[in-house]
Length: 409
Image 1 (cartoon, rainbow, N blue to C red):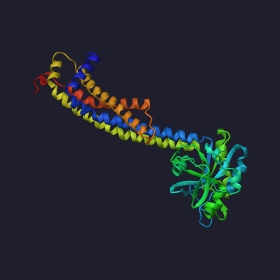
Image 2 (image 1 turned 90 degrees about the vertical axis):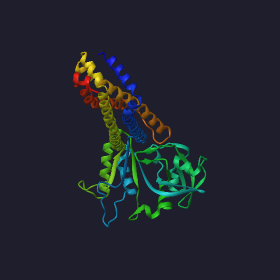
Image 3 (image 1 turned 60 degrees about the horizontal axis):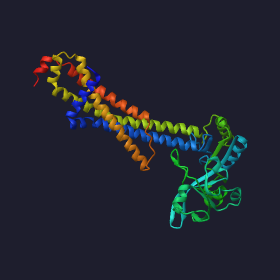
């Protein structure tokens, strides 16, 4: 029989019971829509993470406290990253990388009756350049600010909005832990990087952070500590070598042998990007697999209704076989019907899933991305489900004996 004729007969059989056909493909529609929507959310999140991390520069290297075993120094206190470690690293890398330390802590920041809980970060003037921040208005922190321990701040985009609600913050004063500071600059919005947001920070001179804000909290055994050290390699090909030199320098400064665990983390943005992409990809696949379970439920529904259809059309099948229709024609006819149902459900599911993804993006919850690969995968899964769950009913129909089928009431 002509395949187009089979398709026409399948459509006629489906349209003869519109409500039943609609309920039959509902499981396929829900399953495909869930796969498309969840995969779109996952891919959108992955793209956002990639863009944010790459926006900081793949040449960026970060050093922070906390290594593989969180080693303890003599006396029981945790190993701290010191300002002197920054000075040693700066001397080691020379012109191969720009180096900047920072000390960060949470602080209560107020402007009148508006309060924000912000990340207060003491920095040197090159902090924004190393970390690829751009200035929106005003100026950045200078060497003079640092030397004089000036009470000046540069606000992140979110912090400026939270504290001033759209007003120009330049020249105004805010209170940090009860002390007055003058706003001298505002940074461009940068968004999130991995699991952290970068726009809720408040930057102050590092020496001001030590002497005015944090005091003894920022010291360990009488020495100034830092929360981290950032390096921006001049050449991307030298990142691994610079990381090795940094680790060697830290071991030397803290009298650690090569066999001892380093109580600090030395990582690059490319490593972070690879890790976050792997995690995001795994979660996206897991979400897609969970959503795919409803496709199996939809497949069972198709098989169930097709078995009912075979029973209802037993006399029709017997008549067709009596006039010479071979077993393969009957088999192919019922497979065409199940495939038509599943493909129609797949198309509707793709449209609904795309609509959900578009709605999520429009609401500003998260940026989604519906790729052609996801659409093809979803339609392919729907087709395979229809084929697998349609084989048994089709085989049952094709195996009916003409005499018994014609006698069926």
